Structure formats: C-alpha cells, structure tokens
Amino acid sequence: MNVQMTVGSLLERAEKLYGKKQVISRTHSGIQRFTYKETGQRTRRLAHALEKLGVGKGDRVGTLAWNHHRHLEAYFAVPGIGAVLHTINIRLSPEQISYIINHAEDQVLLVDIDLVPLIEKIQPTLKTVHSYIIMSDDKLPDTTLSPVHSYEDLLKESNPSHPFAADIDENDPAGMCYTSATTGNPKGVVYSHRAIVLHSYALGLADTTAISEKDVAMPVVPMFHVNAWGLPFAAAFFGTTQVLPGPQFTPQILAELIQNEKVTITAGVPTIWLGLLNELERGDYDNSSLRSILCGGSAAPKGMITAFEEKYNIPFAHAYGMTETTPLALISTIKSYQEDSLNEAEKLELQSKQGLLVPGLEMKVIGANGEVDWDGKEMGELLIRGPWIAGEYYKDERTYDAFRDGWLYTGDVVTVDDEGNVKIVDRTKDLIKSGGEWISSVDLENAVMSHEAVFEACVVAIPDPRWQERPIACVVLKDAYKGKVTKEELLAYLSSLVAKWSLPDDIIFMEEIPKTSVGKFLKRTLREQVKETLSNQMNG
Ligand code: ADP
Image 1 (cartoon, helix red, strand yellow):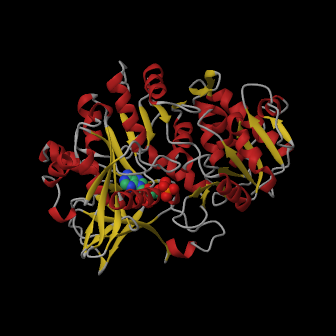
Image 2 (tube, helix red, strand yellow):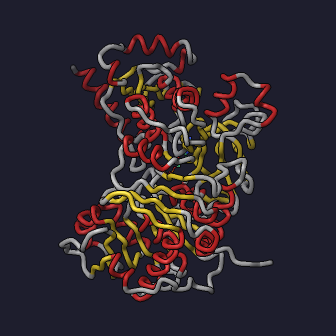
Image 3 (cartoon, helix red, strand yellow):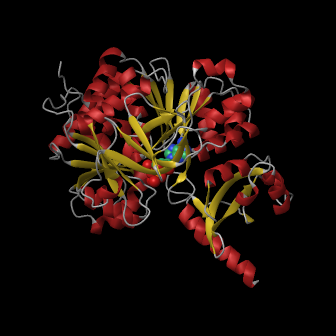
C-alpha cells in the first residue's frame, strides 16, 4: 500500500508499544529520566506550542542545543507538524551561524541556556527569527533576546495529546543540516521524512548496526551533526532506551554513563574514542555492557580498534558517511566465510576499511579511465545514490559541483577490494601528489598512530619545488612519552611500515592538533601552522 512514511510515526510507535522504556538525559542539573510515554506527551505539547507561535508547514525551526531530552522532543515535534528541524552546529563561527540561520530562514530558534550569549551577539543580524525559546531546567535568564519564551512554560500551557499533522507527504522536508565547505559558507542539506524513516530501518538491519529494543543507545555524536547519525530517530522507532550525554561532557562522564546506564551501543568520531581509551586506561570502569562502538567521520586508526577489542573486549564498528548521506553509507564487515579464512591481521585490515555499501544504496567508483577495477589498488572518486542520499544543496549553486547525473560525487578517493570493501584513501583535496605518485595521508596517519608513544597524528602536504607536494607529519605524543621520543626514532619506525618515497619529509611535535567543529583534524589550519613552523625553522 502506498502509505506515507513520516518522522512522527517513528515516535508514535515508541509511545504505543514502548511507553515504559526510557530516555535518559544529562542536563545542567543532573540526570533526568523520561519514559517514551512522557516523551510523547512533552513532544506533543511542544508541537502545539510551536503551532501557537505561528509555525506552519514547511517553516524552519532552528535548534542550538546539546544532546538532551528537549532536543529529542524537537526532533519529533518540528517534523510532526510538518515544519523543518534545522539543527545548527554550535561550534561554527558566529558569522557562519548567522549566515545559516538567515539562509535557512529560520522562524523560531530553540536555544540551550548556556548558548544564549552566542545568539545574543548575533541577534541584530538575524532577519527571519520571530521567537526565541530557551531550553533550561531553570527560570528564564536575563537576556536581550526578544521575544523570548521559556521552553518549560510553553509546554505547561499546551496540549499533551496534540495530534501530529495528517497531511504530510513523505517527500516533504523534515530536517536540514549545514555541512562545512572548503571555500565559502556552509552548504545546506535537506532530509525528507522518507529519507529519515528509511535510514532508521537501515540502522536496524542485522548487517549494519542492528540497533534494537534490547539496546541502550548513547549517541555521543552531536545532535546538531547529521541528526546524531540518525540514532535518536532509529532508537525511538525500535523502542531502544536512549542515553543523551548533554552539555560539555568529558571522557570521564562518558565512561560513567556507559557504566551506570549499561550502554550497549554508542557512536562518535575517532577523537572521542581516543579520549575514552585514555580514560579507561586511567580509571577503573566497567564498560563491559558495550556490544558496539560505532566510529565514523574520519578513519579509525588500527591501534584504537585493537585496543578496544583486545584489551577491553568491546567490538568496534567502523562506518562511513557524510552530511549528504543522512549519513550511513558504508560499514566495515567481516563476512561469515572470512571469520575462519582470515587471520587476525587480515581481519584488522578489513575492520580498518570503511567496508561494504549499506543495503538500499548504489555506488560507483570513477578513476582516470572510467570505473575502477575492484582490485584494492586502483583509486577513484566514490559516487553514491539511494533513497537517503541528498539530491542537492539547499538553494545553492554549489549543487552542480557535487550532484551530477543522479549521483552524489563524494569528493572521497577510494579503492575497492574484490569482496566489495571500500577503503577511503583520502579526501580529493587532501591526497598528497608527490612526483606522479599519490600518497594517502590517511595511510600515513595510521602508520604513525600505530607507534605506542603517539597519541594522535595528522599528515598534510606542503608544496615542493621538485616533487610538487611532500608529506609532513604532525604528532602529539602521549604524556608519558613527551620529550623521550625523537623524530629520528619515529622515522626509523615508519620506514619499516611504508614505502620509502612516502616517508614524511619532517615530523613536527605539537601539543594539540587543530580540530573542526565536530572533532576532525582541521587540515586547512594545520597546513598554515606547518608552513609557519617550517619557515621559522629555516629562518632560525
Ligand atoms: P564535514 O565536511 O563538515 O566534516 P561531514 O561530516 O559530512 O562533513 O564529513 C564527511 C566526510 O568525512 C566524508 O566525505 C569523508 O571524507 C569523511 N569520513 C566520514 N567517515 C569516514 C571514515 N569512516 N573514514 C574516513 N573518512 C571518513
């Protein structure tokens, strides 16, 4: 039957079938617990309140918020009334935040209390916002935002059984998220109801993340970044207990939440898991409830996979996606017949790849001579299409760079092996072109990070008159090794792992590697820092 797939129906299932299961939310005032029944009532109150503020079908409602129960309520209330949930990355610059709010033409902003100063600063530049709603456990703070409302007061005055809109077409927009661009302002990606629902199904498949009612899911990846990889939607759909780690969390807070709430599946970028590993090594935690750490956003270093699996017995799942792909597109997989036929090193190699295409999607890899051979060697750009892959950037000319002939050009250079496993070699723009050969910065980073003294490492290209480009490795040592490991030792170690011509020309020790708003290495900034360091070295 042709029944419309809507985001509201995901929560409706949790309300009806899993009313007793919980949403556990860490806020400024501590841990709060709500059943899905209560979550449903609060969500409907919010939906009603937004309608009373004049929000109608197709209107954009922005959120500036951490991962917590109120943000989750907005996830369903906004699409529930046919409006569009615009999750705003709180770590963008004030200018970029102002740009995207104006570009999306947000009518209402839901703002966490600690982010109010950020919005106060840019309020004079906002052209379309007519109401500010402050999300807090406490009373409204003194603020210059106007007109301003208290989230909890609005809920009190509204109907807990307010119906979701009945006339939603599954192709209507339900959400949107802006992704950073190499040049210029962030680009908007719109998610339809249908895309979000189908992506939720995809997360439930046994061969992907297998998220189910029996899980306790903790999305660490921010709810302002690609819908926390869709976990909050899928968790509600399947009646999964959700743990939302709230504002300003630390590795210690994460380790405690996993232990106390018996989290079984969690998701985040590699830097989060490096932090957790460090914490587990320092403290005494029982994180044995975890059946899966889902890691994506940038390549998972092999050393980290091994540490979690062997030392802590926590299975590690490496996945790949983009803002444009809602995001799940690839996930590392060991096939049944490989369990016996591969040795441990080969299995680790497989896990460090981004893996197989998720059911429901299609891919093509285009190299210099058309589609590449699936030999694990030939490189090409990954193209994807499918029901949860975006078709354009929102009102943006740059659409024509990335979306062509019905395919998304990901800008990622990959190889595919004979089993269909995709390996991300680099971003097109980060690949190091040296003397006619391509050097993968990702491979080099992995090699450096496999040294026991290295906490994290990032490789960038610098221009070279003879070779065109050469790699430089920036390394942060673990505290215990600072001042005790030399460049020469690291280079000697690397020369046993990588081809001679791809050895970095230099190793620069740093206290910290600059990161993007979502915790990925910020190669653009790092490149500038490296150039400066090298020219100081030459002049000094
Ligand atoms: P941003 O450009 O703002 O970081 P995204 O979060 O959408 O936006 O980033 C998507 C990009 O992240 C992908 O195109 C790819 O380069 C990289 N990426 C995502 N997952 C992985 C992974 N598992 N391994 C390597 N790179 C990844």
